[in-house]
Image (cartoon, rainbow, N blue to C red):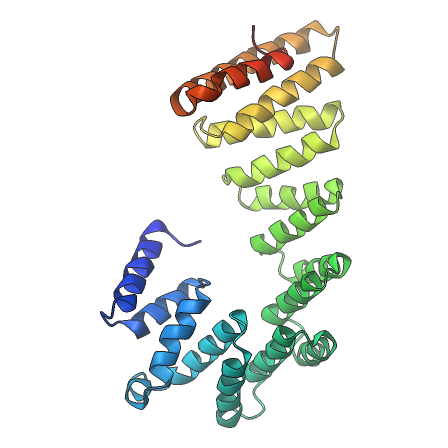
Length: 302
């Protein structure tokens, strides 16, 4: 994850380069190091170096890294002729390179030549079955074609080897949610919470999935995770506060007549409703009447 300080430095350099203050190579190095997606800027400033023999020679062997960076940015911007030219230079410099072969397959993918791209990627995977980038490209290609079942298959295969990849777990969870496969999505969020227990976004997404699944046990667990989001964010997550209210209302319907559980819910629902009212008074006073109406409909406000 990019820190605020790192992002501020990149923005400073970008503004400096855009206004003719120099530092294009430093900017490109920062973007590459932080894995930022600023393809239009990379293409523009990268070409300004590659097209100037003096500037190109000043960066020494890093020239080839820049060709690769510009090729990928050009594909992202659909400037496929520029990408093709960069790849040709790299092919000449590194004949038979698997890394260049990966760029060739990416170019086929960018052109929409799915069958040829898949064949090229599969050939590269035969040589190196543990190539993370290529496996991720297979996922992206399946999604681009609307083949979500194929994307799920590739992500599951990828996670068998690279099970610590949080982004892959999150992507898989989001695909499952889009297909209304909530039990599978819940499993993915459980994995994320186990590995990053202090990230409130995973607790929130897991609670949403459990609430959607429904049933007393799931809704009770969802309420606990909404509560943990409130705890992790210092009570500042409005969605989690609403989640507690919705869960409390649903549980109240499911446990009618069980006085102890109703009393437990009553205390938490009052705290959540009070926190929401306080937040709306400070941030959106014009919407306070709407909030009160919503809470009344849930029987959480007098």
